[in-house]
Amino acid sequence: MTHQILKAAALTGALALPGAAMAQVSISLDSPPDLEGSGSYVWAHAFAGHLNENGIEAQEFQRGALGGDDEVFDQVTQGLLEVGMSPLNIVASVDTLIFGLRLPYFFADMEEVDRALLEGGMLERINEALTPAGVRVLDVTVVGAATGIFNTRRAINSMADMEGLRMRALDESQIALFQAWGAAGTIVNWAEVPNALQTGVADGYLNPAFVPLLFGHTEFIRHFTDAAIAPSLRIAIASEDWYQGLGEADREVVDAAVEAARAANREWLPTQVGVIDQLREADVAVVELSDEAREEFRQASMVTYEQIVTPEQLAQWREAAGR
View 1 (tube, rainbow, N blue to C red):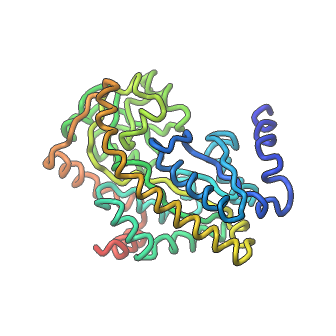
View 2 (cartoon, rainbow, N blue to C red; view 1 turned 135 degrees about the vertical axis):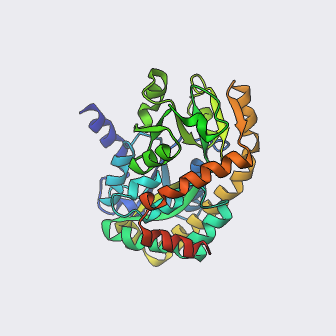
């Protein structure tokens, strides 16, 4: 009950009245408001800034202020919230095409991701399935260098070192990936990850290098392997009712804000070159995975592709990526 009261208070004035979305765009953040360490916040802040500079009032809400990821998604689909910074999997209950972005060792870099999404038409295809359910992916945001392997127990120099580890998983498809590597997986909500790692419920997770620094996990995370598994991505979702209800001029402003936010987000990525050194300074041991070991992980990962997306979806991603 207390949570619902706080949530209602946070929404007061921003979401409660018909037409309020036109007067004010509310943006639910998914990370601390850190312009140096959070690519997601860089996107959200640039998006809000462009709107505010062009006559559309925008307000940022702290992570968790409007609820967790599922609650933010529900509010967006119902038209109660305009924009939410969210994980990829939040829209998978509607359609799993977006999971092509999580295929391990499929994309070499963000340039390939952007070509598939924008030039290859995959962002449009993703939204064809999502918009009837009331949600639109405005953009895909990069939140760090390619994902690596964090754990509390030992250095991972090869796939053999994964044996016996139980990794925090996002969903069943990621559990399948860990199993292909010789490890186990357990689904843990992000808010519960610190406790899971400290109590041994999970031994580690896949994330870009900045995550334990940004979320204060270096007290118990001891090892990082720079395995460059997949680009580190999240999404900006929007209410389709809100977006379609915009006048032509306002929609042009919103679309331009997306472009400005994307540019700021992509320009931010090269600034993350010192993150590995910050991990070492926080007493996290870093392994630079050899080419041979990375190829072993890549080969083992490919068997999971059709567990992550359907064969038809995989074919679409391969076509868009020029494979």
